[in-house]
Image (cartoon, rainbow, N blue to C red; front, side, top):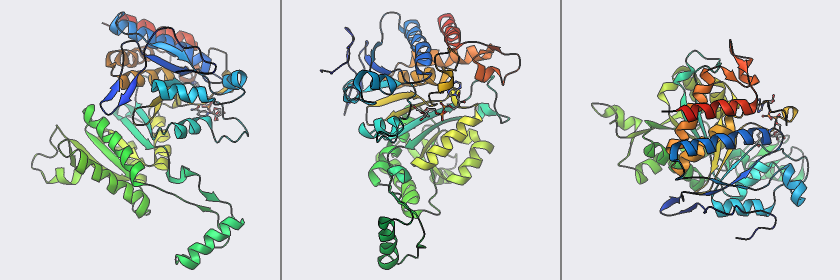
Length: 416
Ligand code: NAD
């Protein structure tokens, strides 16, 4: 593989994906994008934590060879381009990558670099695990009951960008078509947006969520939709989700309705597939979070729901995420570049560190993933945390971004 301006690590092999699954060598090359703003601060801490977890878990038997690739401000300086082809090619070739936050350039034709990366690489599932760490301030009474993994469809729905501004010629033509040919009565002074939801995109998202639940022995997958109102988009999403469960995973799944008729309820060996209407789901995650585990949902519901769920467990500083396609995956901090804090070694690196744990889980390096999750939990329990958490916790000591990383590494090294 030849790149225009990238320096390949001298050792390591590529991760590949094919019908047989993901193939991970013991010394994979993993591309990383440091990111803008606070990106370099959190990346420095996250990289050290990830390396420490791999050393602790596998001695010298496994090792990541990090490979810097560029997007955002660093790419603009190096290539004159916010998102160079080298970067997309490197992710395609090496299959799994991790990134810090990126500035959304003003003008230049980009909606956002993140959206462009997702679309170019067809990373159709946005995955957000939402779990609670003891000691983190939360607005609810029992945040420990929240343990959700949200699969949000990443490519269509109202995010397809099909919109016409009120008063424009195109908008008038669409309204005319709707009113004259489709029997609608849309007011002439409307703006119009279109919400496409396809069988393919809906099913591939549901498939990924169900497979994840089966592989990790999760109790349920909930299809969250607004199908009572939008029958042929959101309602169809629900139906297609049930179809995937029934047709592709019959031996591993049971619907909630079927389980209710069984004498002993759902067999423990099966994943219960159920659905909830989106508005009710916002109540459910507050009132009965313990009843939900994996969630599969269209783009807009997923956008709202993931932020609401993350707020329940203490906010964005500790929320990891990934954008995943068939095999390709980009793990990322879910917050932005927090430019006011750039270069101050001050902010919370937790989101990127936990994205690293998620990445290791994806690679099947479960031991290093668990060390990171436990390490961060133990560091928080000691109340030596970055300012964002410290200001909300009683008796906490504020530490720098790098010191929080050190505290996690100390816990990893001390693990039994
Ligand atoms: P932001 O997430 O950067 O900041 C929101 C608030 O959260 C700020 O008060 C910030 O100081 C705080 N914050 C963010 N990360 C933190 C951390 N790790 N520790 C402690 N506090 C933290 O969102 P914004 O201000 O809306 O956006 C700034 C830039 O980031 C914009 O250019 C935006 O487009 C971009 N952005 C990128 C991503 C991404 O790359 N995934 C996501 C969101 C926003």
